[in-house]
Length: 455
Image (cartoon, rainbow, N blue to C red; front, side, top):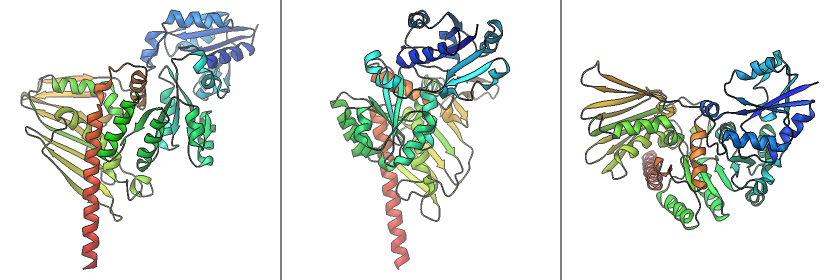
């Protein structure tokens, strides 16, 4: 008798799960299905699991394919199960290809090719709680999005859009999804849109998606113009749609714990916030070539201005930008100074200059510090006048962090607004306004440079 084993969460059981179990069963004579426990899902960073373990087990049983159902409770259990049950074949979907090759030491490993459209075209019929999302853009951030989506229950990537058919097809083939080069067909296939295209295209794509009645998650910076931000949010609200700016730091548990400690009075009244994020990019990167929307502030400014807005608010007195520019005029390093009635904020970012990245929050009783990469907050300390008095805080930061914003976006789409405070509409508008002021200042500087060259 040939024994086959497979594993999964099997939350919101749909046709894709059904087909996987059907094909797994066909590989042998006896199918063992491991269903993940709630505790294990939490440990491995699987978010938004809706159905209870008992419900998920019962749904798997009802398919009729499982001869035996077990509970998976730890990452090392697969090896032990293979030995314990004398398994001949271990199988999972091809979206996990390569991940479980270590199991080849114990049994045959089969990655079942994902059948396109099975879990997406039937979701509306099989399970109305699952949202079909489409990706606009095929760049680096889009590449990181799909693995993170797999760890959020209740959302399914249907396809990808790029006006260049070749780019869309190449991306789609890699991730076993559908490719679209026509927006109308793309919109017909999805409920929500994730925009990961170049900055200058965001406004047009957001507006188009909203007009097609789609919820929108857009990578930072959402837009770089206050009027555009207000217009888009007003349209979304009027049409009962979710428009969500994706600054992953805003949604990660560690950063929200940090904000909570800072605002609790532990360090007294906050008087100064300093945030720095720099990285070195090669000159050929888009970020250092796009003369309209490239540069360090448009790329990293959302991260460093976020804690200032969260801790001091949007009502600042004045803002100033000090810039080091490259030969093409783009900012390689920018310091933003924001003055408030009772505090000062300093945001520093760079793509061509490397500095110590940290987040510092200074108060009248002590200070809070998170070292780089604080934008992926997993650890911070609180210090007081007595140097021996130090409080240490930690929080897990899982994967690339996109799963947190995806999870909160999905919660809002499903009518749960408990995450809205993490990045409010007015804060997104304020960020767009800061970007607009910076771009206007840079334009004036370029015009002055041209005038000086002519005299």
